[in-house]
Image (cartoon, rainbow, N blue to C red; front, side, top):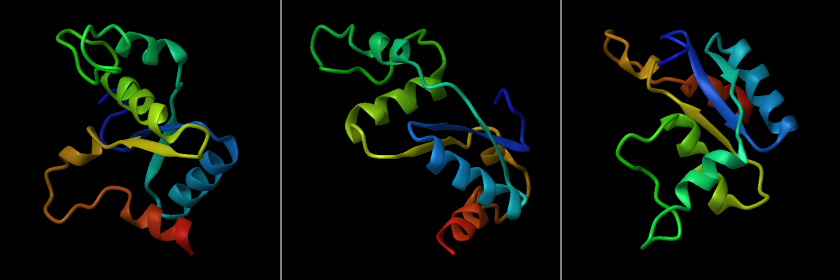
Length: 108
């Protein structure tokens, strides 16, 4: 939501993959902005008395950052990208498919 309806937040553990995705998004005219992926986001999820990680907690901060850190905990050292579609996913026009053109460009 912080980036409005024109940009998606992008999180990645790999600079090269992130650059490739960003280039594809520019070609597709779907825009992304890289956001930080910090160890502190993962540390917050380790506070559960029951689970290894807790993905959501009442009053949790930085939902998209926490979601990216949660995913990173499971991919280990494999390159990944998490895109937060909360802003662009709320467009009022019908038939939207946020970042689909970007993914197509990336796969070409």
